[in-house]
Image (cartoon, rainbow, N blue to C red; front, side):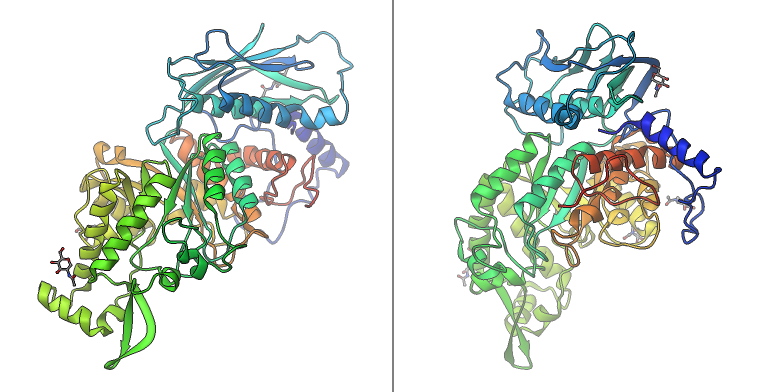
Length: 551
Ligand SMILES: *[C@@H]1O[C@H](CO)[C@@H](O)[C@H](O)[C@H]1NC(C)=O
Ligand SMILES: *[C@@H]1O[C@H](CO)[C@@H](O)[C@H](O)[C@H]1NC(C)=O
Ligand SMILES: *[C@@H]1O[C@H](CO)[C@@H](O)[C@H](O)[C@H]1NC(C)=O
Ligand SMILES: *[C@@H]1O[C@H](CO)[C@@H](O)[C@H](O)[C@H]1NC(C)=O
C-alpha cells in the first residue's frame, strides 16, 4: 500500500535537495499543463473519486485490524463472495507490512481503529447472484470510532466500498498503517463501465485476463466485454461445435478457452462485481469460423468461378440459421449475463457482390444493389434467433445506421468517427429511443507520445445535443484494447492506468474534471496498482515508493 503523505514528503524532500529544481520536468513533453510534479490532492489517492467525500484532520492507527460482518448484515459468514473480498483487501492493506514484520508507531497517543464492519442492508444481499446492468452498486462508508462501518444495500456496493476503504489507508512517517476519519457516500454515474479485450488477434492466457479483472475491480469497472473470436482465430471451445476451435484457433489445445476456463473467468468476475459479456461478431469478422464450419461463409467469385476465398457469413442458406440457432443456444447457457454482444460491424460487401447465388437472391427479394438490405435481412434473422434464447443484445452502431429493426431494449454501441460524428450518432441513437454506450474516444489500442489519458479523461458520453430524456438513455461506455499489437507481454501496461481515466469519467460526478487534481490522484493510484503487482505504466517522469519488480 502506498502512502500519500509519505509520498508527498519524499517529493518535497527531493525538491529541497535539488533547490526546487525538478529534474522530472521532461523538456520533450510540450503538452501544456503536463510539466509538473505530483502534489498531494485533498482527496489523497481516491480513484475514481467518490460522489461525496469528507476527510477530517484526525487520524487513527490500524495496528490490529479486522474486517467483519456487521451483526445486522443480511449477508453473514456464509457469503463467500464477501469473505473472499475481506481476505483480498486485508492482504492489499496489510499483506506487505505483515511480511516485513509488524511495525509499530513510535508515537503514542493517537486512537486505534480496530474494525471495519460490513453491513448489507437489503434483505436480499445478492451474494450468490450475478451483477447486472440494474445492480445497486451504492455504498456508504463511515470511518470513525469505535469502528468503521461500510453500509451497502447489496454486495456489489460493499465490494466497491472495500476498495475505497483500502485506498484511504496510508503509512505515516514511521511506517504505521493509518486512516483518517472519513465519511463517504458513493454510487456510479453510469451503470455500464466496461473494458473490451480482444482474444482473437492474439490469444490471451487466462492469467492475464484474470489479472485484468482484478485491476478492473481496483478501478470500479463492472463489465468485461470479451471480444473472444474474430477473423484471426476462434479460441472459444464450443461443446456443440468443437471443430470451430479445432480448426479455427491458433492451436487447438494450447490456444483455446475450455468450458472450465470460461467458467473461471465468469466466477472470478462475479466475485468482483464484474459482468462478462461475450461478443460473437457476425456476419463480418468471421474468417476463423469458416475453417471449422463448412458452408457457413459466402464463397467469393472471380468472374464466373469461385476464387477459393470466402467472405462474410452466407445469409441466403437455411443451414446458416440452423447453425446460429444451435450456437447461440449454447452461448446463452454458458454465459449467465442478460446480454450478448452480436457485433455487426464493418461488413465488406465485395464478396457478396461477386457471388451469383447472392445476386439471384437479391433480385428475388427486390433488394436491387442495396447490400445493406441483405445485411439487415441476416441481422434481423439473427436477432430473432437470439431473442428466443431470452437474451438481450448489444450491437455495434452500423446495425442501427443500416436501419435494422431492433428490439426496444437493444444497446447500441457507438465506436465510429471523430468527436463531432460520434456526438451526432449519440444524438441520433437516443432520439430514436435506444439505449447507448460510447467507445469512440476510448480506443486505448491507439497510442501516441505524451499523456494521452487527458483526451480520454475529457471525453464525456453525455456531451451531445439532446434532451434530458435522451441523456438518460446513455448507460455508460467501454474502453477498448484491440489486439493487433497487443498480447500478454504488453496488454496490462498499455491498458493501465490509461483505462483508469475512463473509469473515473464513468463513475464520478460529471463535474469532476480538474485535470491537475486527477493527475495527482492518478499518479498515486498508479503506484498503488504497481504495489499490488500490476505493471501499470507511468503517467510521466516520477517514481513509486514501491517500484514494480518485474515478473
Ligand atoms: C489526516 O489527518 C492528519 C492529522 O492526523 C492531517 O495532518 C492530514 O492532513 C489528514 N489528511 C487529509 C487528507 O485530510
Ligand atoms: C429454407 O427455409 C424456408 C422457410 O422455412 C423454405 O421455404 C425454403 O424452402 C428452405 N430452402 C431450402 C433450400 O431448403
Ligand atoms: C444523424 O442524423 C442526421 C439526420 O438524419 C444525419 O444528417 C447525420 O448524418 C446523422 N449522424 C450520423 C453520425 O450518422
Ligand atoms: C449542438 O448544436 C449547436 C447548434 O446546432 C452546435 O453549434 C454545437 O456544436 C452542437 N454541439 C454538439 C456537442 O454537438
